[in-house]
Length: 439
Image (cartoon, rainbow, N blue to C red; front, side, top):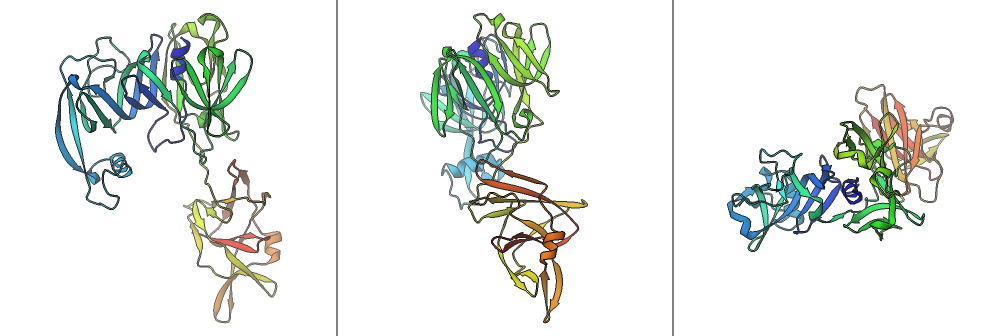
């Protein structure tokens, strides 16, 4: 039971692609690699796995034919195929009319395997029969043929697999720019606790990324508790969880939320339990002996925060690069020496615009690095200058309503700015400014 539940615990990757759910990389004993998430698992070790991508390996004797090989214009395929072809140097980066050869895999009639794709069949994804028959694959890229047939599939699919056919589950570190996610905390029999990001597991071991890129591996039998902890204190756990966990009990009850603990300190399943945190804030405990199956769904409330890695002199305004200008003082008035380098901010019909400024704090850690002030047009010697004064800075400047500094030393300051026109973010220490215009 312990090994079964471990295989479905949430694995959070940094490399999540837009509109795709890839939280696990499952390597099967036959060499197949599935990228996606465990949708369902019963207590017999039968797993329903939803993929966004798969590298499937078949015994060549089980393949009837590789057919319908033809070239497709990349522009006629989905962008995932184009990205793969260019990243793997299958086509030249500059070739706008590039083509990619894809084909269909037809398996022999009646061939059964523990790896069964069911998306193109009438088979139900919530049931795995021991005699399940493999199904054909369409519009895939053949990577190897002969005694073994290996192909790449880049369309969503559903696979029925068995827990005993899994060689390993792998994880990757979150990118430095991702500020949301879930860490695991393993508690050992000797009382030691280790926190880190999931790195993978086999039938006998568990691994975490700790202290940067260092991987620490543990015997499964030595770990008696698995806790799941959100990494961003500014967000709740639901905003940082890619998927929602649901436990179905033998009595027919469904308990949904985010799994925050699996406890195996007891000798019997009736002594062990999982904890599910519900959206209401309540925490439900379920004995492992009472669980019929666990299934998953996408979390509509998932709201990851992504950072920006900036150099000391780099600044973004609403994720648009901004350029510093010098500020000149003349007769008690101040003005930028140029208004050409300005960022446009669309108010979008709202009474006020939100202006988010992101910068590397460097050696300056103060929250109020910038003051926002409106510039006023003044006619001087047949030219218009946009000016402000020290009085404007003291009496009329806008201060940030929210300031956060990430672990990457990127500070994000948000300002609420009403009206339209030309505005300036003034750095009084450096006597430089950033310009933006609200329309």
